[in-house]
Image (cartoon, rainbow over the protein chains, first blue to last red):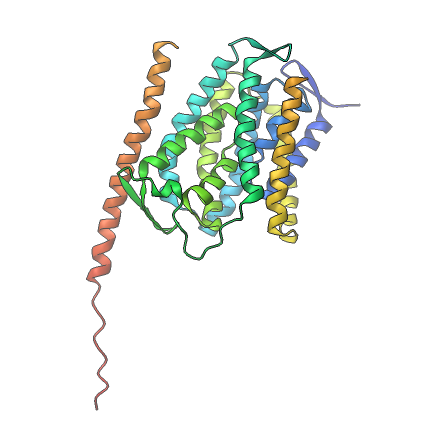
Length: 294
Length: 51
């Protein structure tokens, strides 16, 4: 007997959903990310789910992974709480704007591309996905993680628009409060639009944009990802885009597999992990493009 | 885009700005309160080794 779930008019096998959850969990645990960047393309490409449902359910699943990460990092005490507070103000309004954008895109009809009628929501979401995640993949592939003892302020930390704040845990003085708040808006819009929790975008921005050291970057921002995921999920649920049965099944598979992934991290060299994450991002993006054009 | 859409975009620009100004003011107050405490701590008296 094959157990199935009915999601958005599509019949999906429970075993396939668990396998997807396990795959995403291993990757999320290995690279210390939420896994939304991989889950959304997988739900859309492998399970053939409508993009809006893939995004809503992906956001819901991110609550579980980011909650686990938040509890782990809180115990370590590496977070720059001032950065989190500033980021939160922008990201909450941003995620609501991203959700509204997604909703209005889903009513905008379709465009002709390569002799095919493709819904506009798929074209725009795939284009933003590609642009953003391919940039991150290239950065991860070519740039080394900074391991300086005293952090050097990055380009975003050098923006001269008052008022300024000191970030004591990150050891960065006089950083523009506006640069952090509006970065929050950007992270929120992307989260609401793509369903990706924002962690994978935040980490490179903190490392290379602000000049955080890797430990502080890993501990900072996860509370924002958690809150933004909750706000985004509530908004998507009100639009009918969250399938609770699917999200719960994915959560169980990914939560258990994330522990295995985290264990694998210790036995693999950092360069392999960095380049492995870049390759995973590129492959999931290619799959999304093939799906849109097919 | 209808009026509520534009209002929402305006809110997205204004709310983070207000949040940033309030937070920066609050953090500056916390920093100012911490600094006098460290400067007021009594200096260690020089050790007199004379016999």
